[in-house]
Each structure stands twice: as C-alpha cells, then as structure tokens.
Amino acid sequence: MQPASSGPAEGSRSLKKWGPLIGIAVVAVIVVAIVALAGGGGDDGESTDTTAAPAATEAPAGSEAPTDGGWTYPLSYPQAQELGVEGDIDWGARCDTSVGRIAVIDYFAPFCMAPFTGDNGGATDVGVTADEITIVHYMAPDGDPVINYITDAIKVDDTNAQEEEVIRDFIEYFQTYYEFYGRKINYVKYESTGLSTDEVTARADAQRIADEFKPFAVIGGPALTNAFGDELAAREILCISCGGGSPEWYAERDPYVWGIDGAAEQKQVHVVEFIGKQLAGKPAVHAGDAFKETTRKFGLMYVEGSSESKVLADLMVSRLAEVGAEPAEVIPYVLDPGTLQQTASQAIAKLKASGVTSVILATDPVAPRDFTREATAQEYFPEWIVAAATLTDTTAFGRSYDQAQWAHAFGVTSLAARLVPETSGYYALYSWFTGKTPAAEDSIGVYMPPFFLLMSALQSAGPNLTHESLAEAIRSLDSGNAISAPRLTWGDHGIWDKPDYSGIDDATLFWWDAAATGPDEIRKDGTGMTRYVDGGKRFLPGEWPSEDKLFVVDGSVTIYDTPPAGEEPRDFPSPAS
Image (tube, rainbow, N blue to C red):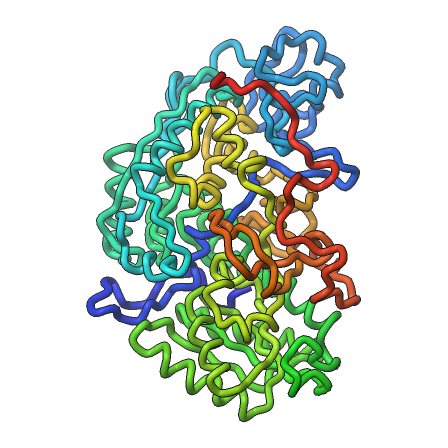
C-alpha cells in the first residue's frame, strides 16, 4: 500500500541538478517485483484454469462459427472435457493431455487450447492481420538517473539489449506452446530518450508508436508518469504496465489500460485489516526494549507523489481510526537526494517526541535507508511496519537499511514467498526452453509478467482478436490461490467493490530476520532476509487472522529450496537438448 498516487508526476519534466523525484511511488510500474503471472494453484493443490476462457457452453467473445464438432474457438482442454469432445481433438505435442496443460516445466502453465484451423478473420483490429499481431515494447533509456538512483542499492545492471534478447527468446516460447490462431507475434522494441518523469517525451513517444508502428498492444511505459498510457488510450491502443492511477482513472480508459500490481487502495485494505486485527491496542512487543510494554502508538510516513497522495493518505488515516489505530503523526516527504537526510532528521525527531512506537511506512524503497540510520543516530527504536510499499519488502533493499532498526521491521507484502530461481519461475523456464542463462537475469521477474498476461489473454480471446475481446479475456483470467504466486484477477471476481484493472489481489506477512543468510532476489548472497509468516500463506480481504506469528521462526520461510507441496513443476525434456 502506498498513499502516494500512481498518477502523473507534477512538474519536474527533467532532472536538472537532481530535482525532487516526485512521483516516485509509481515505481511499481517497472519494479512490480517477482510475479508468477502464468497462473496459480487451487486450494486443493490443483492449479486453476489460467487461460480462463468463458464457460464451454457459451460462445466466447472472440469465437467464430461453430466447427464440425459443434464447438467454437477458443476452446480450452477443460471446456473440451465438459463438452465431451477432448478425445476428438488432436492437441499436438505441445499439450500434456494427462493434465490438459501445455507441456512445459512450469507448474502454473496454462491449459492447452484447441489447435486452430480455418479463417481467423484477417485484420480484426489495428495491429492485427491474418498473419501477425504487432506488439511494441517500451524501454526506458539505459542509464536513466532516476531509476539508477532507485536501484543503486541492489546494483541491477541489466541492459536493454540483454532484456530484448530474453524477450525475443520468450516470444519463440509463446509461439511454440500458445495458440495464436494462425498469427505470429511481431515484436517491436522501442527505446525512449526521455527520463521516467518526462511527461512531454512520454506523450510524444506514445504518439510516435501509434502513428509509426500501429500496434495492437504496447507493453511498458515511463515509470513515473501516466502520460504515456493516457495518450495511448486516447488513441485506442491497448497497453499493459504503462502507468496507471486510481480505479476511476482506469475505468475512464476502459478497455485500453491494464496493470499487474495491486492498486494502492486495494493494498491499503490489506494493511489496515492486518493492523486492526493483530496490532491495534496491544503492546509494541516487536519494538526496541524501551517500547515493548507500551501500548502501540502509530505514526504514518508516506511519499508525496502527486495531488492524489494526500487524498490516499487521508483515506488510510480514516480507515486506521476505524480499527483503533489512528496515527498520532502523519509525515509526508518528497524523495529528493539533496534534502533527504535533513528530512529524515526532522521526521525522526518528530516521531520520537510524540512517543510513536510503531511507524507505518508507505514509502519508496530508497528513503528507509536515511530514516533508519537517523533513527539509530537519535537512539530511537520503534517497530517499522511496511505497508506493502514497493520493494521495501524485499531482501535486496532490506539489506541496505540500518540493520539495528530493520531487525524490528515487518509488514504486509503483495510479493509471494520466494523460490530458488534456478529451479522455478521465469529464470528456470527460460533456461529449460533455451538451454542458456538469461542475459538480463537480475530483472527477468520485472519485465516478463506483462508479456505472460498479454499472451495468456491473446489465446483466450480467440481468432476474432479485438481490443474488446482481449479485455474480456483479461477479465476472465483468475490465477487461483497459491503460496509461491499471488492471486491475480481483473474485472469482477467478487473480491473488490470497484471495477478491477489491476492484477494482484491477495497478500502475505513478512518480518526481517537480521541473522538469516542466503540469496536475495537477484541471487546475491548475504546476511539479513525477508522471512514469510506461515510459509507465505496468503490472504484476501476479510481473511486476515488475529493471531500474531511475527518473529516466530517455526513455520516461517525465507526461501523455498523446492516448491511448496502441490506446486511442484512437471518434468519434460528441454527443447534445447
């Protein structure tokens, strides 16, 4: 949860002399963290239908006339079973008919789709012909100082060229196993010259992409402004992970803009429910010795990104008040490298003077370095409660904070319990398919999720591919419940009371284990790790337990050496061998 908006940054169209990095909160657009998007596991250990096509008895939005078998495209394996026609269809070598899923090692692999024959309708929408679907991939320039400042603590040095290499290999993977109804993916890389805060260049880029390439969809966009996504939507070009805002912002641009990470308001619901059920009105037992027997007194720190930041912060304050946790101090800040140290000094002094025992962090991932160092300098050791703040909940960034302070850190995270990347997830899938290590290996979990969403939706939309049929396919997707992957849905699945254009719905709890050793998210070994409560068990709104299991090693996990029971990958020979 971040009270700061994921809307456009105000002012600061360049970073002359490192001006304030307002708008930093939407860094989630590019650092949404490791998300297993291809699907999810069900409660009984069996994964649900990640292709999520409409019921087999209905004609899906993208279908054409019925086939000789009496069914229409698209048709998933479970739908074929419902109709009793699965034995009449030649599913081909790409399908493991024993489980009805594509024959890859990914446990979360989508169900097989019936191989297409016939007329796909040709040019059904802009960027679509009988032979191909044009997709543009937006890339920020290598060396963007804004992003470099954010990621400096974890030393990610993947280049755009390396990222492109991995994506092109994955495009081949998709075309090998997914059903695109007679069409190929025409992948176009677009590298911007603008910084992540530059609204003017963002709009110019969107205009050029729409006019020059005329794509069906765009993936990615500048991290700290939604001007790019706004311009594409105005030109009726669909985009995924290209910037966003409130649910109302998305709804006004339906069906053209979609996100992967959970919305800020949705994360806020999780954070407040957790605080109300487990923390409010109780002693601050996870703080330093001076506070352990003191009834919790809360403070809220949030990054100011736009005019919407305060609106969201005020909403959180009112929600916290309803559960008996109204903050005694609410401190906004601007992420400005030139003034952050002074800001931290003043903020910590204010929290300490007010007797705040528990600081709720709705921050960017950089500022906690200064906040925690300053807290130690002022001999102030509160609880640090991470409010699903992007990347602040990771091992890589956690190691960059003052460890005497971060030993008292815990909170809500949308991320899933981690697995060894060499054995599962995008890294393992890529290595299995290509027989090589991914060139852009540190950030593969960041840039691949939007592609998996788009490809799953493309095969679920069917041959009559339009922006409307793709949107309906996205709305039908439901990854199901799992431990090693978040629950992802869009549209109305009975989880939220507003139209949902963002992906992640559930969350889990973590605490910082300062003594644990192992690899971080980019496989660098070190001391200090995020430890997931109850093995990373995840909760939807209304499901949060009241029992406090924070800082209990028994039953917790830092990283799974093998996937949780019921989520083991299947075994298939590598195509590369």
